Amino acid sequence: MIPDSNGAAAHEAARRRTFAVISHPDAGKSTLTEALALHAHAITRAGAVHGKAGRRRLASDWMEMEKARGISVTSAVLQFAHRGCVLNLLDTPGHADFSEDTYRVLAAVDCAVMLIDAAKGLEEQTRKLFDVCRHRGIPVITFVNKWDRPGREALELLDEIEREFRLRPTPVTWPVGRAGCLRGLVDVRAPERMLRYTRTPGGVHEAAEEAIPAGRMAAAEGTDWERAVEELELLRAAGATHDHEAFMAGRTTPVFFGAAVSNIGVRLLLDAVVDLAPPPGPRELAGGGTRPLDAPFAGLVFKVQANMNRWHRDRIAFIRVCSGVFERGMAVTRAATGRPFATKYAHSVFGQDRSTVDIAYPGDVVGLVNAGALRVGDTLYADQAAVFPPMPTFAPEHFAVARPVDLSRSKQFRRGIAQLDEEGAVQVLVSDLRGDHAPVLAAVGLMQFEVVAARMAGEFAAPVRLETLPYRLARATDAAGAEVLGRSRIRGEALTRVRDKARLALFRDRWQANSFQREFPDARLDHLIAAHD
Ligand code: G4P
Image (cartoon, rainbow, N blue to C red; front, side, top):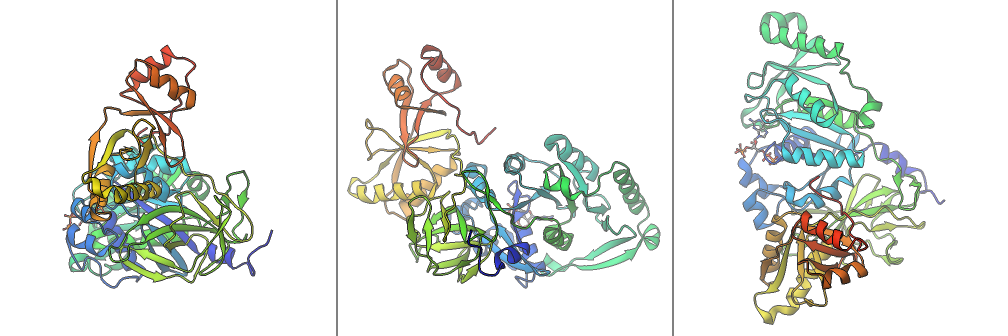
């Protein structure tokens, strides 16, 4: 093994924290992201432009449709420093229909902050994202947001997390005062005082934080304080205290309370990311074993995105550095082909903002511009070969035939479809019967089709007509299974996925698939990874 020259990779990795915020839309992810950046002094004002529409223009969302729908399809990375650490905050798409993208982003982080709305508790998308974290073994820190507004009881929210996620909450901060009447926070590691906040108008700057000794609290806050003390006592007696090993094993989640919009409790959360979130570690390889941090450079492509900026029609591959030191211009190899790959155009990307990256360490994300050949799941390495496990493709549940509206734009149509396929924006299925002028698009969520239609018209000047097919279920099959399905009476269809040449058998529903299987027990029909389990 050729280690990096001076152990810089392992040293720098130890001060990296790479994480994502997972939440249901509207729980406050954008607000929290901004508040974290404010506390890390990466920005000087938060909420400078109020409201979703305004903020979206500033932050990571760039497509017209994203702005209109308040979703973020693209993933970008915000890097900031805090207490000697470098924090990489990866943006996840805001909608369940992009669960494949979210899964890929979560493949690139070491920790997640699960954001919960104090009034709503666990919501549908929180559940799905948490499942992904559990599946990937990502430790989760919980932030209960919007404590400045009426909401549920703190203990009740903890119960819900424990019951639904089989995840033991271990509060690190505790609110004094019910949701909507927040008096302050107690840091359970220093319970002899309460932190009182004075928010700035509009939450533009950090809220001033003042520590009030417990002796004064009883007089000043009366029943709110007594109640908090009792609740803390209860939690202590129940053993709900942070245990690092249990947290790393995904059995517990440290919990924080606050209000992102007023910057309350955000500093404590930011400190927790530094103190509790794990730094990058050795990464599992496809063939077994791990890639040590100080092995030569190896990185994982977790996202490919074209035309992020309509003025630069380029394609960016986002790579998480997994080992070694990445230096711009270095010669790397693409594991899938064994061919060399140029790294001259390395950037950090957040929304429309780009800056050149000259050097990056494990945990960092590099955007390689014009990385036309790269695909999601690819491994790049220097000197010593590495292949990281492939990214799973989810079972599509919606199918539509795409045709160019204007036949004279067939070339642009084909180019656009191929591009979207390579990015993983949608799955493209073909068959001899249908031909490549009318491919079948397959999606996990319907909104993916909207993105396809918007991008085909906007970026490729090849508007498409999408004709929905009646299938809702896909199973993996093989050539023999496809042939049997083709000649059976059952109105399913066998198609080949362009991306990985997998053969998929499409059915209207589970019953139809089952009756096919009963009739042809030898035909291969395997389950695909379901996004909605
Ligand atoms: P998202 O990215 O998770 O979708 O959520 P986002 O940050 O856009 O926040 C959704 C709404 O919740 C916003 O209100 C935001 O101001 C509000 N919010 C976020 N954090 C808090 C909090 O701690 N307390 C309170 N009370 N509200 C919070 P909006 O009406 O969509 O926009 P705005 O005009 O209020 O900014």
